[in-house]
Image (tube, rainbow, N blue to C red; front, side, top):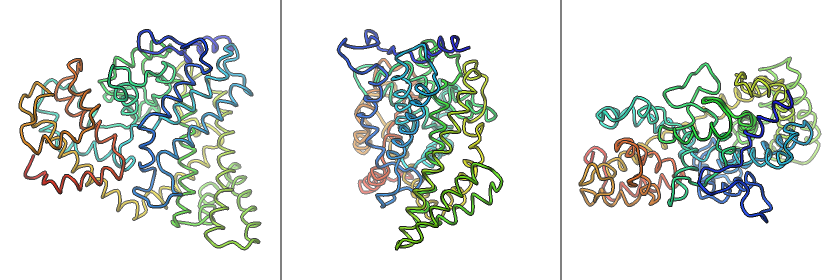
Length: 476
């Protein structure tokens, strides 16, 4: 079985790139592997910097200590790379490929850093707001054009930040060709958490419950599957690791942020976890260790805020350590099934850390995600996104020639609003080589622009459009 898996790893870690003539290794004096360079390409890209002003849990939060999408993504990348180091140096995966010792940790760090790049402003609420706008305007925007297939319509009615991430990295970052950052086939394959299209989703399958690419990137996915030996719809094995690290990061660290914001205390968190899983050995061990250190900290002259803060830091270390150890164990056990596309559970859920993660998620849902302060700002995000989509749709579609996306806008206001769309997004939309139907391209330009915004930029642009006189009820 080890030899069989080594043959799989050779394809799963394919360092080839899609752009003709890119080569696999670059110059002979290049000290980095191709997959290591993927991480650098993502790190220095503009969308990574934008994540500093994108919501993780608490939209438009003024506290520098509360996590953003950027800090969350760096944390996921760090956890994923750590698992990768353990897998190649201690567990001996891909022993037949000497380069795997560098490539596996680098690939996991790359997809950990990139996994949320396509998320719109205001977090997952932003995804819901985009999908809701298309549902509200379905008759006018989607259903009146026979060129749109059902799958094309579902791309927007079920808008997905995961699919936008793939599009962002492969189409929207460089404007002189259709390869974007030109990442390796290995990184692209592992980046796709849900390797199905929007009309192929299945809530009963972990890997199919959402979609991971749009119809505009379908041909690209065929290339990726062919190059990595994965069957259409099959998830890359390392994607399971990244997804588990994402789950661990947001579940543990969102709990830490909730305490930092005063939504509950360290003692509240421990009490909740003990109540949810009183007999689970991992929950008991983590809570006992954190509570013992909390008791010791109480002997110091600490304010209540300081005591909560340092105690949650201790809890974070204990919880992450236990969960990371658990996913490493189950990954090794499950790798043969993953190679045959026969593994069907979330990695953490299948591990002994499952009850701890489930209890943390329940605590966060009750005390953080549904807190009135979060819900109030979510309403702001819905209003802002829908207002911007109304304005940009007006600008995109009000042009002199219906079949020429680059033709002049039909009104001065439409011209002004259209110029506020990022130039590289407009260039992709207007390109004569874009094979998608005009209406699909219009809708995709709209989602490209909205998804690329930061929280504060979206709010300021919404106010700007109101100041220049755009009113959806009078301009639509």
